[in-house]
Length: 163
Image (tube, rainbow, N blue to C red):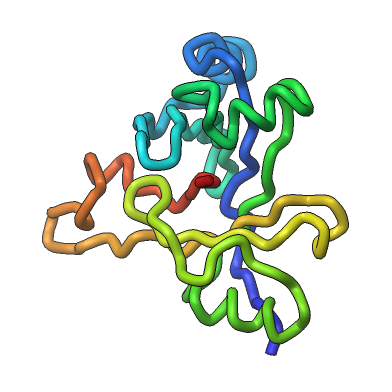
């Protein structure tokens, strides 16, 4: 059974300065800051920039020198860090990838941006691209946000890489 993503969720870009990157992607390119959070467990500050329906860029800046994003920046400099694919069930998608011989970075999903569930496909098995699987956090329709979401506006599907 294939992984079966429903959409490209976002592309993740590693940046050394989150505020400067937000200014570029909003002021220069015309995107809209849709969500911003600090995730100490993942060692990142992040921002989701929207460019219209379904077009998102995730900016990822390290919180410290030991974070995965800091190591990425040291090795590669700023730039494209991941391609995130939206899936209906991250556990099922990860199992399908493993059945096809693709390694995942985690045995179990982790919590990503705004309460999403995430896992990653190993870049050595995906043609050199870090592929993130993202299961968006459920949005409650009672006017309240999903657990872990800062606001209804910020409950966008997305995720980040953790160590």
